Length: 151
Image 1 (cartoon, rainbow, N blue to C red):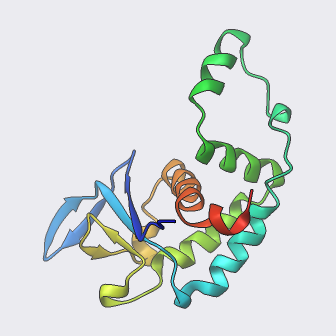
Image 2: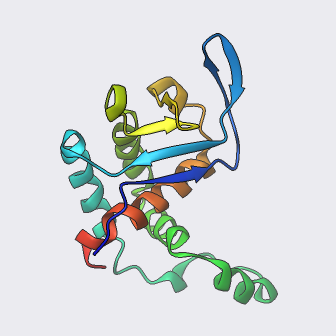
């Protein structure tokens, strides 16, 4: 079985950051697979995500009937994870744990890099849009946690 060592997330809402005195627009985040330095955080995230496996997605707020089927067909697993977390009211907790995972690490062991070069810091994390954070959480789950959760 092959496991990913990282994934690249394309930001829907780029943000500005400084690199060697120049202002740049962030386009992507490269997120590394979890290592021992974030074990405590990934354990917390697994507990939060494990609780999503028994949620009935039919309890989501009703959409217009003509759009319901089209939207359901396009909804990928990452979006369903986010919806499940929202239903459980765990999204804030999961987002806070994700923050800790992404900003952890130093040097070449940084867990998240902006455009593949600059380490994501706490203040830069604050510039990421809510929608992007939700999507990153879903992608993180899909890329790194599904094998251990057995959902």
